[in-house]
Image (tube, rainbow, N blue to C red; front, top):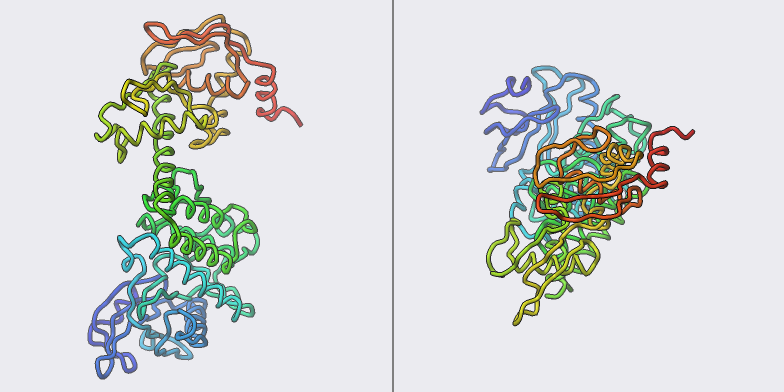
Length: 464
């Protein structure tokens, strides 16, 4: 707050009078200021004294003054004071128009409006790169604005042109929560265009779900943070675009121009979408929600192979948040048809859709849709190793308390059952019979298969 301490309401800098303090940024304070005839601006005053900070400040002014804001959608510099030797009494400053932050302007706006804004920002950054070689390098929601009714890019304090010296130092500064791994790791010079694309993509995610920060790294289209969970038409396709733009490998991401074109194509598709597309995407989101619920349930509760679900009063709320019993029933039917889960639907007279589902359990394909198979197999490896020496029988009681299994391995019965079913579907474990008894489940003649033994050997790192 050093810079703010040097100024107060009523101070005059050039033709500007400070009205009130707005905020502090990485190297400067921002004040609302007024000039003659009621002209208003946001005045950024540098409060850092290092030569590197001042060089970045001057570069920001230079880049903005060389661009025509009527042609390229940036937040322009209206006025500036850049003394040769800054001091406490001679602070550098520049004036920008007062603008509305994009996240604030688009709060609760339709998804399409947010995509338009990011598409326009991508177009602006693509033009700056193609025409002037400028990489922004600090793309995040806080640096995008609405000015004169259109989305604009601002805050060029970390921007760099081809012949500019790198003034970012030996550590990542800027959009830290938005940067991809290659910037944080600091391994060589990043491809800054692909960095800006990555940051634009997770900026879109933040705007869409109205969160201040994105998840780290790749945002998978079918993952926990998928944009497909946004209940608007087209969100699943948009989630796939964000996955591609946040790919771990920079070369796998689109260019700025390509990303803008992808978003443009998405917008065109939304204009042409019909009721079927909207209903289909809602159905796909519901199926994913039900699948996640089932996988979580069988890991925590002793369902074994007799789990059931009734859908009698179709319009009432289900135990799954946001879904009715009708939604769950439709999702279960389609997931069984697609092989994502096992189950036995049962019809009753006068109903075209199943009213009861029995023996529900996720298949390997369904589990892999919502969880990482590699992680799950690593968790199950001790159980597989325990059955290298075969066991005649184990009993899994209907409880959630840990029990000791073959080979001194401890698991809750639901998790033991889940892991053994997973290993069996992968062909790593074999048992001759799985049956329900009054108190739980009984498995007989359990052994690790030859494929299972090979997998244990290879995953242990023993093979050179």
